[in-house]
Image (cartoon, rainbow, N blue to C red; front, top):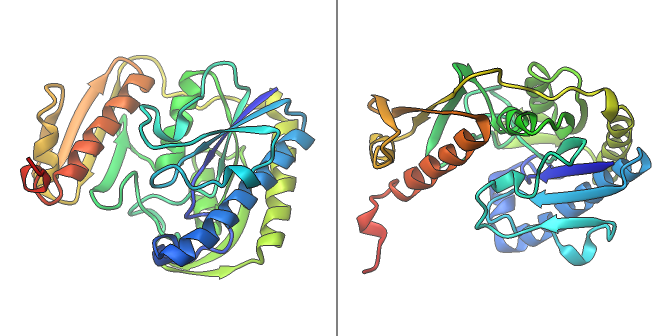
Length: 283
């Protein structure tokens, strides 16, 4: 049984503030914590019956997990030039997807730790076919288009509650209690990893009964609201994108996977436009 793990960093055990993930000395410590949380999920997956596990590092530069410390039974997708981003390596051969260390969406729960959607520098809100979603729900729709069901999530309690509104059947491991966007009541990492390990095992054991999250028949429409009008405007350099407001855009694709790739193209353009595209180019 093949299991795919998408790993982020904001929801791992021990994290309470964004600065912990950016300050060089702190970041190195949290790389180790991230790797350990992922290892707990890998162990749980194998205990639950997995025969193969692939992990996609999905935070920031997507090169955070320390390969020398990763469970040797798993393979790691690392590096940041990836068309499928947090889902690089996922295909129809997998029987389940797990989300380790993920976070709530921008504008969702008021207390979700380090909440954001896609790229905090530019995205304010994302809708798929009219429904406001965060990254976990969006990634689950993409996995669903491949026939792969979501099995497990880990992160703060507000994130778990938020995601289970859309995915009520997934196992949720709580790594901390959210107090504010940049504050949390932390569990000891070993306590959090015990829950990750146990919930991951339980999730994989019932993978055969899990159902993919599907968007439905027909085209897929994304609505993105950015934080600045310059970000939205520059995405219209793509001929399929239309402005729906000063900071909002819309595009439609034939299927979820194509729409996902298109969305990341828009977000990359929006990020580069934050302070002016040409102003940031040394030519």
